[in-house]
Image 1 (cartoon, rainbow, N blue to C red):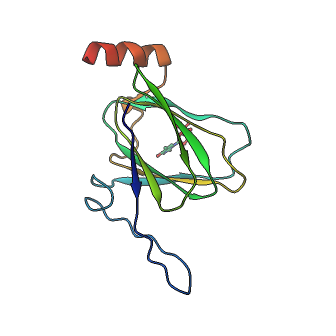
Image 2 (cartoon, rainbow, N blue to C red):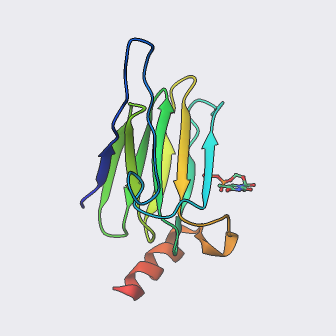
Length: 134
Ligand code: TYD
């Protein structure tokens, strides 16, 4: 399974680092929503869902975490450890976020506004959904 990890351009100078993300340039879709997770309790697993339409870029802007991706056939684990790295997560992809370090902040750039109807939260339902689409 192919995963797409972006390396964004840090604009560093003697004052520190800065990353700028623009829709259609650095982020391959129109950004309709940004949200972030912080104060994540150790050993917790977040996500555990797929989306029917929504695409995302995940950036661990502080600390680190791991993302388990599952397209219904194959699984892959990706570590996010740098504030200038972004992981693309397509629709029809089961995702779990875990192994959050202390002070981890996981920022998500999403192609859609929040819509509970776009979620598949049951794993067996997800497997049937992707199987039917193939
Ligand atoms: P949840 O979907 O459980 O987070 P995750 O699956 O990424 O671990 O979301 C937690 C709560 O936040 C839930 O009550 C829904 C709400 N929420 C919003 O109101 N807007 C949003 O954009 C998101 C992602 C969640």
